[in-house]
Length: 105
Image (cartoon, rainbow, N blue to C red; front, side, top):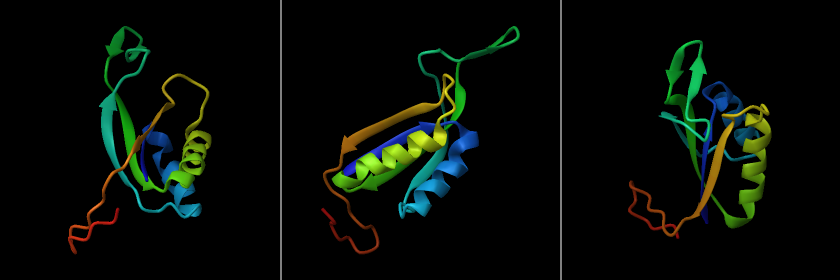
């Protein structure tokens, strides 16, 4: 299994969550976060903002589902401008259900 972490523009977060749910990937965690990419923030007029509001998604998927999940996120969050976000895919070793204590991997 894999963990897919995606950082997207907050205005795209509902569309991303909805698109994932329509493709039967409804189990996810999301939260508001702050950060910056290669552009080192944004300048509006004379004011510089080094940390920009983003939304982080955290999704556990089977190995053969990674390509579909990343495709959905890329297509839904794409604007073509800097700051669209990043997707990180990492291995997932073990999952435990807190209520039952059951190990799922």
